[in-house]
Length: 316
Ligand code: VAH
Image (cartoon, rainbow, N blue to C red; front, top):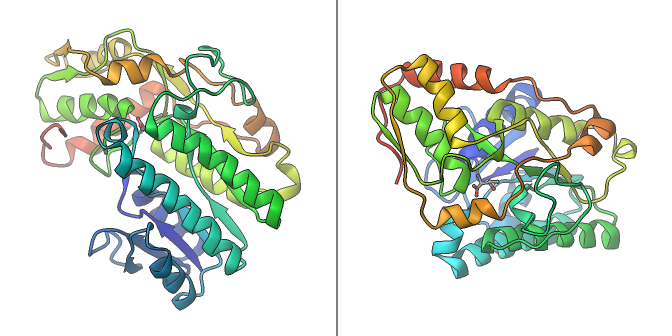
């Protein structure tokens, strides 16, 4: 069976749903730190992934063969609560790797991020292998996590697969403390007919992707034959890059009354240390990765889904 850790989160919510489509509800167990899950058709376990004993118990009770570990603190929250973020991100990953080793799990998926890059990374077409000097607690934990995954894979012959996700746009869960989440807030505001204040300045270009593409990439990577995966560690993954100004212009073509103001805060410093675009040619070569949504198709799909829901106040 497959255990999704963080199944209530921004990625986990949609990944769990996609895994059910591929494997069937009986094969997927959802878990998160909240007492209840978001997928009524799935078995659910309340799990704090920093509790190794509880994790091992869930793996044993449900005869888990694969883990998708999506529970973590994101960049902005991590800068506000560095010890909490480091503990959640690192103890959580190390628990998953150690439990997977002891239980001899077939596969583990764990997400890295463009946040593992830093100021010395080429800002355009950030390479698969190159300088990585992350400047956030979150990015440091992602870079350290990449090396821990490689260490376990090499030392114990484990099959651990990973993607360096760009900023992910989705409508199914409230933004969770990420620096790229301004884009989700802009789309939620447009759908709610309210104005929008961007915490990044208008020309802060960042790599982004629509959640359905990120979820499909994850499932494609995990089902690729191991021998095709020539790139050790975590794959760069990309779709397109845009700036807050470019996103606002596209939204304005659809919502004429939409207004944006730009009030950069501490998150501007985080964004300035990340690359503007990513070279994901290794993913395209090794497992035929290709994004399906264009930027405009993402905006239209987001506004369509958000329009059918009552307006949501902008997340803090
Ligand atoms: C964040 N959405 O902003 C996450 C992601 C690359 C961005 O890691 O922290």
